[in-house]
Length: 178
Image (cartoon, rainbow, N blue to C red; front, top):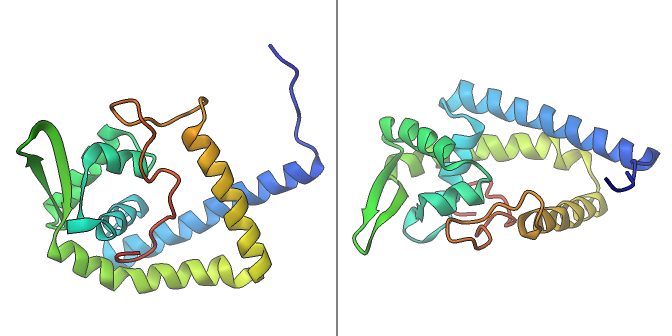
């Protein structure tokens, strides 16, 4: 086993701040989405991702990769969204193994109602607390870390064919078609 490079004080401070802020933000977003719209955070992200792609549809395997979620976990969530009429599945005529998740008009309408509250809470809890320089540094630093994790050998999330996951390190959708 190699030499451990322990975190220095500033790295520990950054790590603790990151994990705490993430947990607090996600908890508040989850509470607000559940209470107001009956959605989990992951379900909101599914709707948001689908709203931003052509024809509002995406292969399930690619969507799971983009959301950094397991295929079985995504299948369960799509099933829940399907029961509510927010998403439907369709098969691909040219590839019987491919299944697409498709955002319905009802799903798009719910997303359009939920997005202003979601974005408002993200802005209030996160971005309003930061200067423009801090936002830029946050985006640059976390963007680079995401790109490395998506492309690197440790913890790589690969598509079924072994290629990198499309959208895994892409900008996170926060609202309809964004």
